[in-house]
Amino acid sequence: MPLKSNLLKLLAVTGLAALPLASWSGSVYVVSQAASALTVLDSESLAQTKQVDLPEGPFGLVHDPKTDYLYVSHPEAGEISVIDRVSLETVATVVTGGQPFEMVLDSEKPQLFASDWTRGAVLVVNTDTAKITDILAVGDSPTGIAIDIDGRQLFVANKGDNTLTVLDADRPRVNAIVETGKRPYAVAFNAAMSQIYVTSIEDNTVSVIDAKSYKVLNTVDTGRAPYDVTVNADGSVFYVVDQNDNAVRQFDAKTLEVVNETAVGKMPETLQLGPSGEKAYVTNWFDNSLSVADVEKGAQIRSVDVPEGPRNMLLIK
Image (tube, rainbow, N blue to C red; front, side, top):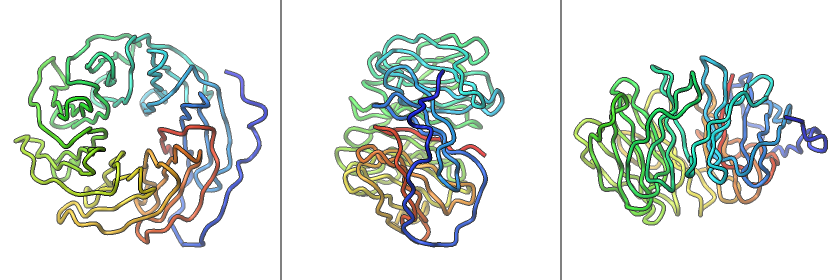
């Protein structure tokens, strides 16, 4: 796909503080839904290095390290783009119909799972053939999706009926349906604690669910409109993006107490942690920016403009 020549310039970076953080060499990939664009930034300078146009309304973004392909969902177009990460050329298009939303890759098998908002289903895509191999029924308006690789389970938040569906990752079977808070949105799996976290936008909570018994262990109060939830590498803390507070909250995974709070941009959407775990990257949907924060100190340290409507993001070394 052709590069947008008028957007090849370096993005304006605002330095907000000089805090010593572990550096890492890699790239930040940002999908902007309104601009229908994929932007690549240098992880340290936050300078734009590449950008390509995408089909209408890109939303979800995942990376397969085995093939070095990116997968981008397009809910409005009813398709998933398969993109070579190096060239940023589209190598295949999976025509799904419906509205493919969030996605997760299976690192044990050549398959990708995508929640389908309109069909109340999870699509199973063979990543070798770029073809749909199964459609699994879940709840109403499924959104967030996560996988337990060792336990071979999928966790799907159903925003329309306030439930979490637990699916077998290897065969078409429902393991459990768990009641959550109102309007569940994002899901994360903490492998170290064998727990599932589900954010609920309407009642401002995170449900903590045992991944074996499927019992709700606790309901944690968050800020307003919790969207994304992310677990750090060792499972000791998790982070919740509170969209209506323009903030990220860090929780201790054992005590479930708030450890830190960091102010970011307007209507934050997605959070990814850098390799050291102390630096977080956050897309800000309504002010078209990417924040970089020191989550240990609760301080935003940099902000950079990105194309309109940034939703999902990946960090790749």
